[in-house]
Image (cartoon, rainbow, N blue to C red):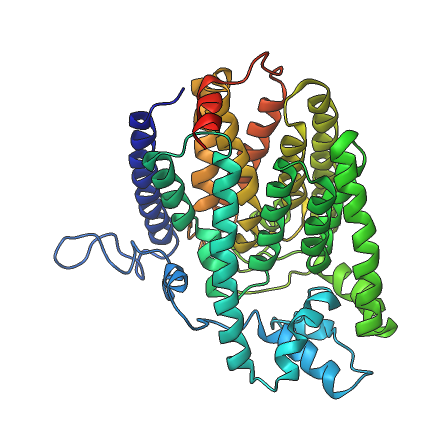
Length: 454
């Protein structure tokens, strides 16, 4: 049983680690642009221009703002829904906008359909973004509640445990960034956490439906459903339910957008996006290789010209990651208690890593896997080896903090532009390591005690 004193110490360490990450981000800025970001001010104090969360407006302010901060990411979704309302034959996808380094509609037609009620009420883009931001904050609170229940179900909830979770959840940068950008990533993360929560409550079909809703907005998440469907038992039922629901939402998307727009998405928009971005928030192997081996400026939002060997390497890497997750799931199902949760966490983590584009705000997908990792550590003493604890902790800090390396590229400095990506790999490694431990022969004592007090 982990004592409250130990959890309080962990919380203090968490706060110190996030403070250290802020310092690292400042050093990275200084390393890239020493004149613009000096280490010290004229008063010989750490420079405020250097040691802050983001050179732009602090994303954490979006956690408490009642109005949308930025609408640039939301505007293409609004424009697609508005264009469809004006003209039934409107073509939603405009790949040329991507080439011009402009924000373009890149989600499925289902995302525009979800926004269409706001357009039907004649909201302006700003009014629609404000309404959506308020809704996103409700989802954020609901997501946090489900993630905490995922962590704490069946155990005694202490002030220390609640405080540790609250600090981690409030400090987790991808969530703040998604709220700041009025991002659809908030909706996707909500459905992913809901699916994990429903799996824990032994509702695999309902979990599959929740997963399908997230994948209906971001189609590469359909690979999560496919990975689960290849397994057995409740895990398979979740995957099959998700695939069945995706068939329905796919037909709904086609009916809403029309066949021409649907073909544009599949044969033009998606292939163009697969070339990747060197832009620094793209925390994928594709983005890292682009920053290391091309002359693209990582400080500029830029759809990179495809580089054949980078695209090939990224594809092979992604397939290997997915294969690793599939094999690990199959092994875990034979040996572990609650294998569905572990397999789900593996699939979500692997699919997110395998994508050629993984913006920082896409790492909201890791909320459920991180909660599952924390639950395993609390439940099973044999998982508390120093190496596993350090790996799990590092994965939370690296994926959860902001490392501003936008002015670094090439070898070797470009290697410093992938901290979040490295954290994602550590999270996957932690889950794989957890799967190698046999199931316990008895329930943990602190879990039994918690069940009696709940």
